[in-house]
Length: 108
Image: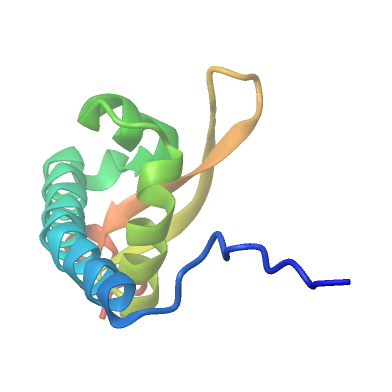
């Protein structure tokens, strides 16, 4: 009886690693510009701030697309959650974010 080898669906050659690196390099500038847009929109919103849903709506992107950049900006202290919440279109609530320049004790 001869053994049959199934070809791998996930090739492990150097070309795929190079392709992944190239894909990352294409995405990297978008992440930076997305963070910059989030910062600018929150700066413009002032003390009223914006929720993640409001940011996504104004940026015309899915809310899932901003959760990573928002977390990164919160972790770095550039923005913060105020403790206030506002309703979302789905009936839940979402935390209000503010730029650190409007944060009093919350900003760095």
